[in-house]
Every structure is written in C-alpha cells, then in structure tokens.
Image (cartoon, rainbow, N blue to C red):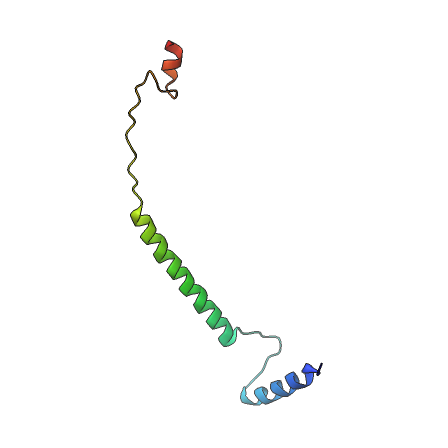
Length: 82
C-alpha cells in the first residue's frame, strides 16, 4: 500500500500557497460540512412539513360516553351504592 503521507504533504504545500495564512490548530468545516448541514436542514424541513400535514388530519374531538353512571366502573359512587 503506498504511503499517503507524502501525497497529503504535497497537497498541503500546494494548497498552503493559495491561502494567506494557514493555522494548523484551526479546523473549519469546509464545503463538505456545508453540504451535510444543508441536507440535514432540508430533511428537518421535510419532516416538519409532513408532521404538520398529518397533525391537520387528526380529529381531536372526543366521542361522547354512552354509558350510564350505574354501569360505569369508573364511577366511585356506583360502587358504594351497590
């Protein structure tokens, strides 16, 4: 397997001449970071749009209870009476 450090070193020396000042301790996201961030932002926007569409279809009205208090098991007074 070829030594990649020589080609990486050569690329850095060629790119360093294009930059005014290269700080080896500073890391920037670059174009790849921007592309990843933009894709994630588009995915979140799409998910939020889909969620809003689905939430609009939900019916929040509760169905009325048809049980009488005597037959309801949730009524504590019915248990005390009978």
